[in-house]
Image (cartoon, rainbow over all chains, first blue to last red; front, side):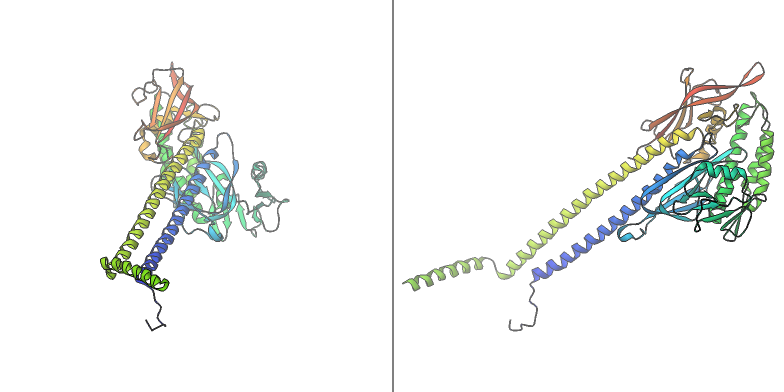
Length: 308
Length: 198
């Protein structure tokens, strides 16, 4: 009693302080967990919504169509592609800026089998432009979707640009795709003649050169795909497209057998060749082999009994 | 007198306190206090656990609702454009390029290989129903095709609970009359169903 230097705390107080601290710790722990869960839910929801919003971009008569997505928060969209399974998958992951303008750590992947999204490994912004174009090889295989952030402007240099590309860019009227004359200095320049631009397109040989990477293409749809995506995404999505060609070729072989008595198109062998060459494609370097088979098939499919 | 009274009143109080202290020893009183605190903490913990459970149930239910809404949105937006996807579209097989035109011959071939397309469109079932000319709701198979009305492209796990959204399409096929092949197109309803998350 006389030792006044000691702090006199009764057992009751000590007990309450310890238990109180435990309760506060648990409360903080669960709130943090809940915030993380909420972020995961939000991320998964946004990814799924983006995927669903791509559904109306399936083209009918159109040669290309464009739209935009505006998100409530600054968002990073991660473009994940893999070739596992019969069609591979298109994964979409999103991260949004949360409390304190920091990027959320969690990003849940939502995957789709019927989507082909071409972009850099990840893109960032609040508004994103998407334009889609049917990919025909020789039958319609899929609608390719090119997604770019509104903050990135692409400038197509007019020198030697093919007329069809110039007209298409002009008709699309997408705010971040510009033709020379309306561009500014910081725009990503795309040239068809000089190779000292950010992106060089050799339209005759059929390749796009970007950051010292060469991506080979056939058809305009794949040219845009190579322009707007990185090599890894492009090659992976190209393989997925080949996987779908393989499945569609088999479908057309079955259709031919089904209608053989009513209308014989006699394309079975050519379809088998296309299917096999598509499934054997290793990278875009050998795309011309598949393309030649596709062109042969297109020529064969001009009779009265067209399969597609 | 006054002083005496005061002291006697004080003594009385002291006596009363002493009586009460006689019944509960000091150590027991402390134990009582600990027990009271423990019960209080237990009650608070149970309260928070209950609140947590309530929030969790609410959250899970809201996640399920969101998932169902997303599935509904997917089905609605999908059905409006599904006829233009390569597995269904007519392309130029029946003359010029047609929008919202389903190739019945191709769909029958697809129906036979539908296991390859598991999870491809993210819907539980797909059905194409001829609505004009009106038939007798005969389900199509490789045996009775094309003399049938309903093509069950993909059947759901529990068709009873699926919610359907539909779109009107042209349903075309190749026909043979007197040795000549011709294109026959009819009006059909393309129904896509999704199962709500339960």
